[in-house]
Amino acid sequence: MRHARRRIVRRVTRLAAVGGLLLGGTMVTQAAMATETPATSSTPRSTPESVVTNPGTALVKKLGTARTAGTWLDDEGRPVVAVTDETSAATVRKAGAEPKLVDHSMNELKSAATTLRSAPTVPGTAWVTDYKTNEVIVQADSTVSASDWASLTKTATGIGSYVRMERTAGKFTTRLNGAQPILSTGGRCSAGFNVTNGTNDFILTAGHCGPTGSTWFADNTAKQQVGQTVQQSFPVNDFSLVQYASGKAGDGADVVAIGDGNGVRITGTGDAAVGQRVFRSGSTTGLKDGQVTGLDATVNYPEGTVSGLIETNVCAEPGDSGGPMFSEGIALGVTSGGSGDCTTGGTTFFQPVTRALAQLGVTLIVAAPSGNGQGGTSPSGAPQPSLSPTQAAIAPGSTSPGSTTPVTGIGGGTSLAARLTDPNNIGPGLLVIGGSLIALVATRYIRAEQDRKAYRDYYSATWG
Image 1 (cartoon, one colour):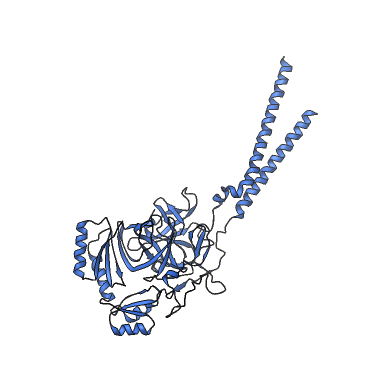
Image 2 (spheres, one colour):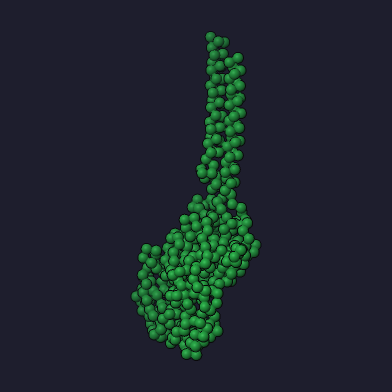
């Protein structure tokens, strides 16, 4: 009778343990699936708006490069146009912008840049046209030797007095090591903007981050694959496309990360304007801001020369490469390189987004406009521009990054593997599974011990 009761208890215990395993497995699955983000975006997409950041650009185009020498935004965000004669100044004034008479036209300034570009390349140097001073500024970092500096100075002197030479602290380097981190065997970069060709989605990032064929991951254990570089241009340009492994960017594709789980919703593209306040996000230093100080900059990195860059006084550090630059939700550039750091400050150069999109044949991914027609952009509270409905009348100090929103992981959320290893999601289920396994092992052990004891008793009774 006692043996029958033991068999019943063992069977009940085994059945309960098996049931616990099934229940625990179900709990783990439900917990993991509860946080799963769909592989494809459920948010309707829209055509990104093209924003004019400086109406003075239209006046420069109208008057021509022989009569103008660039345009910028003043401290109040109003357009200023450099002109070479009073007739052009009157035209600018009549259009509602502020003219500034200068000695050298854009044609002369561009000719100076061409002469510098034809001289022997010296790594560690850069030059950019300073619209406000009507000069071409040549910079040399700490790696440039005295002999190279003397040779470059001789070339600049031969061009004219409007070429100014400057020594700069630090080194001009690419920022390889928002913008969320993406990692490969070559180092760490930051994701820039999500773009699409209508069939597949990609990350637009810096070209120096890795050659075509580079595989990128969202973690340092190489378990969460983001995608692979399918197009790259560096040097000359500095942009590349990383195609998502799933083919789609997922929900939140119109958002760039700015830290603390927040992001900025991107609504369109534009060309940066000198004097414009801009924001940069990167996986090393997070969100930083500053002003555009020059356009069409040329930088002689150790790896090669890149031209057509945006110069800013925003700081950046290794790992920030490829991260997005934007203002009021408008995509402007991706981080290329520079000098200095975010402790002492420095200069950072950006690849213009509009040029990269045009050469790659892709478009920015943005969400469909909301009911108010603003496309998710937060109003800055600044007065409307005087020349046209653009950002130009927004004073640089009152500019914001754009409307903020919670940000999800790269590629539309956390992977299944990550969810299955998150104790916050699966803790209760694992406890049930663990308890059930212990019960099964215990019943097997007890039964084995009882069988051994019964055998010993039988052996003793039989053989004395």
